[in-house]
Length: 290
Image (cartoon, rainbow, N blue to C red; front, top):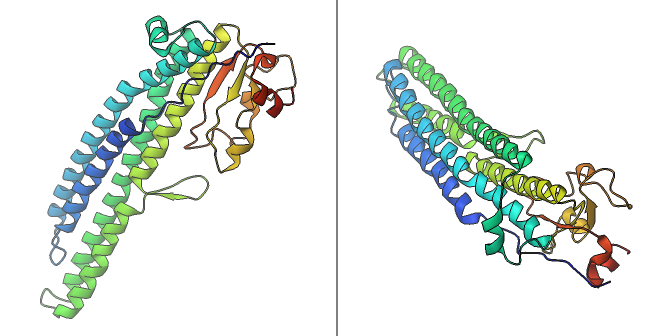
């Protein structure tokens, strides 16, 4: 049988993602500057409250920028997933032609809404985590300054004050840098976690859009992309999978693949739909023992 496999280059969104990460870097830098300007020798509660409000405003602007970024880019990612199916299945000859006939079916319209809401919620948790830790640190440091000034006296020795201020300064800095601890116990800086979240959500949305479009066109198989992965993804590269649980043939169903191995956080692999596994090029048929 003549090979019929049309795989377009995998999408990259690094520039777009870097713009989002820039929002987080700038917000964290603004907060860090405000924390470093705090006079820790005589910090009053009113001053602390004013600083907390400034930080709240910085994070509100961050949330607004992040939400707008997600609303702008997630539909484009899903459109790219649809295009992948259209080209792969021979409905269009080129990416440009495919873009002119993209339509969001009901599944993909729902996917857009869900992907935007889920991603915005995950990013909101990043800023809320920063807010919670910084506010807690400011309260603790304020209380410590007030206690120190009460027990040691405003005119305590310079050496004592220097040691106390150093420790309090570190406490404030740690509150911003501690970041997020995920379910696996890994520690992430806020901007790095945000980058991981959006990259993972975008990859998932692209994959789902590709699958939805393929199934709507009665294509029930796909091939996992290959780019020379070094982690456990490598054992799945080029493998045929089924897009529905009951597709004929002994091919693993995409919904049952081990997420520790493939399509894990930060995974860059995509799927390319096919109608018939036996129509693949020789190298892919050999890889899949066809």
